[in-house]
Image (cartoon, rainbow, N blue to C red; front, side, top):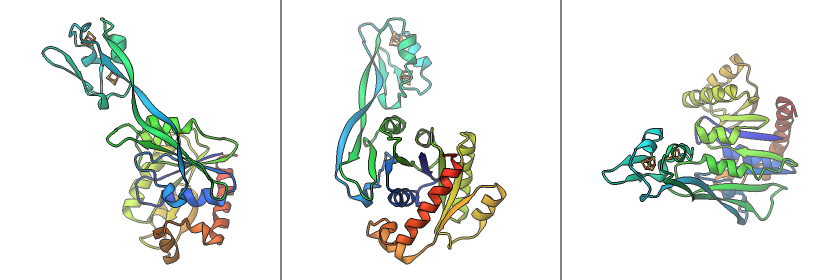
Length: 280
Ligand code: SF4
Ligand code: SF4
């Protein structure tokens, strides 16, 4: 079963939920898809080993063949080319690798080369049976989705797969949650939390992914998130309180189920709800 943990915005506790759910099961594979800033291993402290590099194909131009016809400039919807008086200049980091420019070039002046944008790593040890894979995007690289897709090629479907999605509702999130059986949306009971939750709900509805909500720090703020879930028939899977013991463990880098075993039972109960939700 594949379960994505997502949120409309950062800082809601998405990684906390991913870790504690994974560590409550016996066979989890945790994929940290927040590739710009993977932080699951800050709590697991596993030794990581590189699995492979990830690259994308980007065009390059043979200036001796180019006749400056400008067809590549006109076709590129990402404005990755600029025509200069005597050459065509490419801004590789704007390229999305669609391949259109090489198709339209009448001179065969465009060829493709691989540009490395990051790596995939995995843990060489396990905690409570949890195996970690993470993607790491190179600093300054704008495109997270190719790393996330490459990371998902390492999914082991004999395990329960927990995908810690990037925050937000943009392309990297879509890459992370595509193909999952269900999605847990983590939020907090504040006006900002509700606003960003509603965006995330629109996304998972559009993608037809069964979903439920976890309200983190549920005893701050107000009941607007709960009312929203009730009105929209979205199950509230769990409420995590704003509790000093949980906060202390977090500050020490310890997932709270490791020290508070009654929470492990709650996460296992929630997992059973997710199995029903995802039809697994
Ligand atoms: S491959 Fe696509 S995105 Fe990249 S430069 Fe060519 S047309 Fe633009
Ligand atoms: S399409 Fe080909 S020939 Fe035309 S400007 Fe671009 S690289 Fe040069």
